[in-house]
Length: 225
Image 1 (cartoon, rainbow, N blue to C red):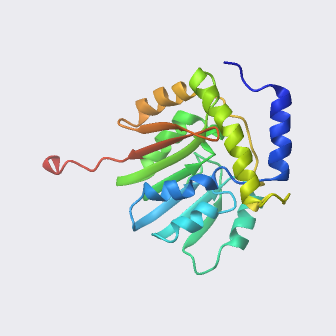
Image 2: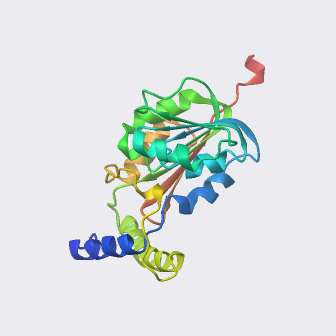
């Protein structure tokens, strides 16, 4: 099965520019369903305009939100009420992640900007025993299944964009102003490398050119303590 032609891609880009909606925010509620009702510290990697960090703050004792872009981080700070327990930090990841252990680590549409295996190793290192890692990432389409999901996403993308914007052209939301980059790894490469670093990790292809990764840090065996 062939990839979409350049002409179709250009038409899709023009439609998305006129009727924008955030594909990552579409999965925020799903991400929250993977997490406990209440938890201690959370780390949001690649926090962008802070939408997910603010949602996490409704459950977390404290949220550390990290992004490499100082402009979008400043915008996130402006959009975040002072009462929310969110700290925004500008840092290069994965090497610049803040010290500490977190009950929840999230990473949305960011890990394809990073050295994949190194990033997962660093996340594992910062995840507390029993803690949950949730990654929403992008992958490079290669197989017939990938291209079929991409074709389905084109129609769904247009329908949702039209509905969310009530059929009227609209400006892009702040969450869609961060830098972008095409994905380099295929889904099967992601599955293989993630499985080497995170035994028992759960991965799944998703609509809108994304995949999900969920992993829980094992708790120490009490018998060995």
